[in-house]
Length: 325
Image (cartoon, rainbow, N blue to C red; front, top):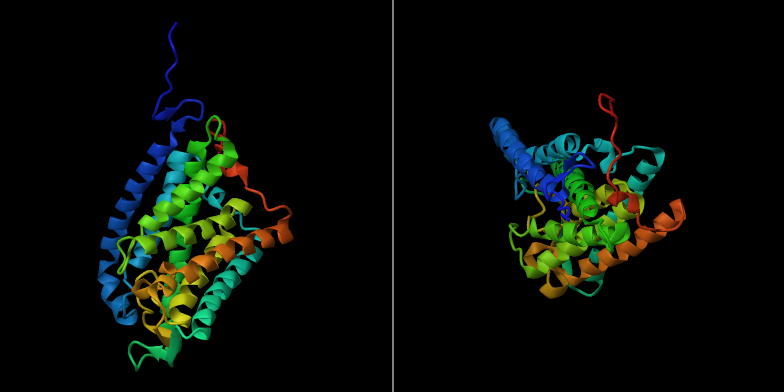
């Protein structure tokens, strides 16, 4: 009697490639789009560099656009999903959760700064500073804000929306089940998120662990609501307050063209993160853990029990041939 051997690349029941192949092809599409948009934006790079002095690279914008475009294309062609299904069902509740995420990211980074200031690990050396003294402060600080909006949206679309969803679907097998698949996908996608920052200036094993912890924190908002509103909000203000309000390095990059405060850190690198910034320190890791608790309490207050959205691990429903989605 012949034993049935499942096709390792094609899921006949779902009529699509299996998760590992979808993730691989999405990465290829992402790189291709990044190259194309990078080449297309090259003539404008000089003007952006003049505005965005410091470590802010002009490539952030095309890379962000390439990321979102690659997820949209991969969703349609590989996943058979609408873009909204990655966490963009834009209801009133979605925008309320976005506002909460924006508040939470700002509050937690303010807490990190406040603790460092209270114990003497940081001192303020100046206020309302710009990289070029003649630049208007309002314009100079707007550049990194827009940059972090692009980064916050694009990185959440990729790491939480696409990676986590596809990993959860692929791991939803046998004894693992949907709950276990979602939890494992949080850990794996957060690890990938940490590894993607290894090329940043000052990166180390501890900074990678810190980014991994931040990834788990960001994933909490997604797996408890099924939407990207909270992670996007947190990501934007966590970065902006870190770099352009309090003057810390952000994942190895300096504060960029402007910051409300200029600071000098004196504390131990283990706690404050050293040249990589707070994300490589125990204070920010603790803030991320507090953030997970805050998200759970918020979800319970707004939506009822804070439980994992097991639907993240479910395959999408497929329309009949010729039906529009």
